[in-house]
Structure formats: structure tokens, C-alpha cells
Image 1: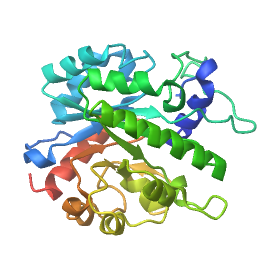
Image 2 (image 1 turned 180 degrees about the horizontal axis):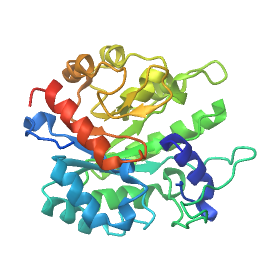
Image 3 (image 1 turned 135 degrees about the vertical axis):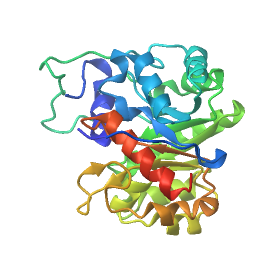
Length: 304
């Protein structure tokens, strides 16, 4: 199950239980403005079994920046915000961003709750969302001194849902400003498809002042050229998700193993206003091998 499906399914499962089924490398240090970041959703299937060990492995590869996401332990991988921030600092990493859900999703017809490897559903704490829990989520990120709060996904299947989401996003942006936290929106490919004659992503850009975390692969799959988006909205994209896709845009791959021209995109980072980028691979079979491969490739094209 891909990240987008996870968000939609678990958004519905706020009242119940769920869970997704389930060489050697030499690393060089990157320039400060290109220090590598990682979205922890890459390790969703395993991190909660050994949070400390997993984060140490990530640090050992060379990743310096962390974007957190959803945890089966609840909270921030079973920790309070300040506790999690300190643990990352002790590993030589910094906490730059955190993902939350915009609002719960309606259950798709015929959908079933996914199970763990043993075939049994695994319960996780209810997933909070910006519509219902905005202030506490903003306050927690501020407590952890995290620079960015990001809406990972929000309902947009109808124009009414898009409009309701825009209202939530604008309210969250204002709350974040008061808390001195930056707020951004993370896309999938659906935001670039017309909903009742309008493009949700274009509505988000024109009807909000929030910043954007551009998922380069999902934008590409949605038919958008990231570089052209940067030119049209310079400085609006301080955060990026970096993942690769096969030529049919069906399979997510480690960075550099697919079809996306990352060198061209990174050359436009100043136009985008990029401050942090996070490698992400939606729950691969071998997450550690994937992030090593991505790190190796990006180190080469970024001139480390």
C-alpha cells in the first residue's frame, strides 16, 4: 500500500484499528545547504519496533535532517516533542518538519482495513487531524521547536471538500504564524487532476498563503514539471520530497533508479526557494538499502 492509500485509509480508521501489511557504500558529507533529509514514513513498517535503533541506522548512513510522520506508538514515535527533538540531536540530526492529516477521509466503497504480516489488524492510536485537532498539533510542533508543520493529505474528491480543505489550511496557516511555525502542504498526484472543472493544486496556490512541500515524483506523475512550477511561483516551495518512479509512473524507486531528472530540478532549487529536502520511499521491502542508494546518488549529483 502506498503512502497516499495509507493516509486515506487511516484517516477513516480514527475509530478503529489498522496497519499496513504488511553492497557497501562510502558516504561523503554534503554542503550545509544540501544536507540530506529523510521522511520517516519510509520506515513506517519497522521504526516503531525499534525507534532508537532505526534512527541510529539512518544517522549512520549520513542523513542529517528528519521529517517525522505517523507512528503506531502515537505521539512522536512514543515520545513527547521535546524528547524526540533531543534524541535526534543526540544522534547528530535535526528535526525540521512534521506531517499531519488535514481531515479524515471517507471510507472507499468495499475497502477493508489492512492487516499486519500475521494477518491480524494492529491497533494504533487515533490519527489526529488539522480540522479537529489543529491547535494542539501546532502547539506540539512549536514545543519541539520544529520549523515546519506540513499537511500530508486532505480530502479533495469533490469541490466542496476542496473548499472545506482550503478553509482548514488557511486557519492552520494563521495559527502557525502566531506560533512562529512555518506551514506547508504536501501533494500527491490527485491535486493536479480536475475536480468539477477546477484543479485543486491551483486553488491551493491561489487561495492560500501557505508554503508548499513539493513531492517531485507525485507532481511529475500528475503531469506537472517541477521546474515550471518553481518559475510560476518562485520562492513558494521551501520543502521537497525526493523519490523516483519507473517509466510508467507506477512503481516508486530509490532516487536515481527511475526516470526523473533530479539534476535539472536541483539546479532550480534557488528559484523554488528550497530550504530542506527529504528522501522518501513509500515503505519499500528494504528501507535501509533504499535510503543508502538514494543517498549515494544524490551525493554524486549535488557535488558532495
